[in-house]
Amino acid sequence: MEAPVQDSTRLSGSLAGIRVIDLTRVISGPFASQMLGDHGAEVIKVETPGEGDVVRQQGNMVNGFSAYFAQFNRNKRSMTLNLRTAEGRQVLDRLLADADVLVENFRPGVLAKMGLDDDTLRTRFPRLVVGRINGFGSTGPYRDRPAYDFVAQAMSGFMGVNGAEGGEPMRAAPPISDMVASLNLAFGVSAALVRRERTGQGEILETALTNGLVAMLGYLAAEFFATGKVPTRTGNDHPMLYPYGLFEAADGEVAIAPSSEVMVRRLLEALGQHALLEQPRFADNRQRMANRDALREILNGVTRQRSVAEWIDHLNAAGVPCGRVQDLRETFSDPQILDQQMRLELNQGEAGTIATTGFPIKMREAPAALQRPAPKLGEHTAEVLAELGFDATQCEDLRRRGVV
Image: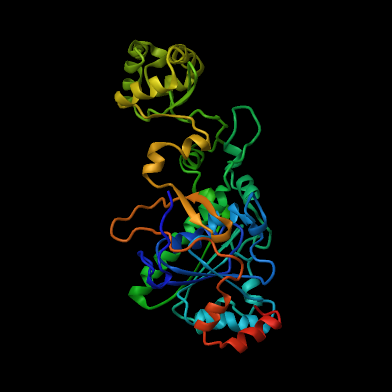
């Protein structure tokens, strides 16, 4: 659906009135600042003159505009600013003087080289919430290493537990470490803003690509801590429950996820196989895990007799969690996804309409909203400088000298 673009002078949402200076680029960071913007914050994306965020030149172009960039940069204004120059850093100082939040994803120490080390930030901007994303954290032996999603997936153990049994480690297709770190950053910034309301104090917080994925290991980490055994890769099977996974239908596969004994009983009753529970080898989950291949063969023999659609209707009616394995064309035409408005259309002006994913958090009183499409590089530079008190002559001088 196409969401209406609202007047940016009347930003709505739970974060309305919060100003965010966004120094991030690529995915980790831009996704976080976009979420803040979705919920009403005023986000000013600061980019290098003539270059901009590298993602602007990546992915498929829609009439010259990157769909990749649009996916992570709606609800922002863009200004160019050369932070390698003293004048550029002075403009940044003026931006921060009236800001609530600064987000950055430089390597540790880069911001300090610009004259904005942590002590300076605390002293000069005591109410500022500073949020940063890096690869491994700002301390420890890996603090200075460069990192991207693939490296974080590998080093966090995440890749090591994904993949087919006996097969190679497998990364997740989406850039999950970037996305998780961004979620953590947006949450951390929001928590720090709540604390500031109580104390008047700003905060300096960070999240790392690798740390975020380590925290997401969930029950796999819990089992390792409890047993000392490294989990084996199990592909689409659950590492601790069975039956749970993909099953063969007459025309495809069905994802079936009974997570308790009650639901397993429902599943077997719906398949006409309730008597299997009377067999010692399938009587409880421990035995079913030990005899997983045998049970899979029996159940596939039943599920192959009907279509995917028939099984989804039948099993859902029986109270068994299940679903179709969908490609993205099917996902974004699914009536539930459409009802939830998880596809939005951005009006990008000359570039036409670009689709992005929608808002995952549904608020009733202060819902997320599309305030702005993704900006052109430096589209709002003059506007932001004017708000800082620069007149037209000063703006032109900054542009002529390569500051903006």
